[in-house]
Length: 274
Image (cartoon, rainbow, N blue to C red; front, top):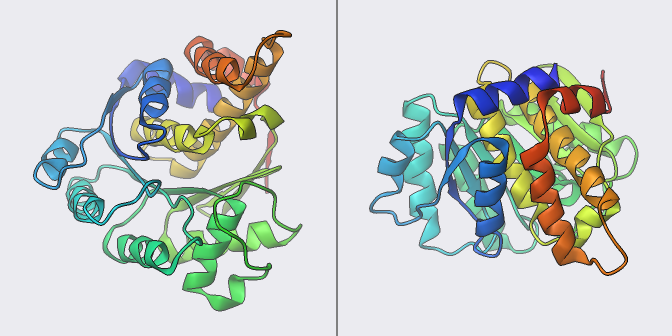
């Protein structure tokens, strides 16, 4: 199934507009090119909505958030909603400050998101903001990737999916995607992915491409993107030599996305649905 979703990305070559993290914008652009999509990055409020109108997908990433970005995100999100263009939210560090949380909540109130992709701390923080009872884990910084306590992660992902209508992808030691009444447990990936700044941002960009090419099945598209990057993380690690470090690994990761075929993903994706 996931192989077909990647094939549609490569066949349709969606244009994905990213208002994203300045630390990782280049890697996000390159991973989109590697998967067969086309990136465009425009965050000026004066043109953001017009750029979105010409795009097939929109990714809003809260990394390196500034006040000037918020109007551009809102305008782009409204434009995307009006044109039925899929929208991905990456709530980077949402639990790190009240201002960042309020910005995320405003986006969620005013924009209909197709996919929300974050680490365990970020998803729990958002789920808790919507429903305090869902905040069933200790407070966290909201910027660290990691696995939530067993039983807590599915509850938070499912709560956020139910409240927003989005497919929710929560990444950690075990990745989860909740949406449409289905929960995917995904097992691809490698610990070295945590040593690269922006692997999560790359995943959100990749999810934007997958959902743009597979609009009828956003949860499956998000799950396929998670498995695809995780599998590529495994392949990148296998290339590492004695003198290689995290900079080489970052390049190998993007190379692996470029080389990934639908057949590779179909055979290499490790997941179950429940």
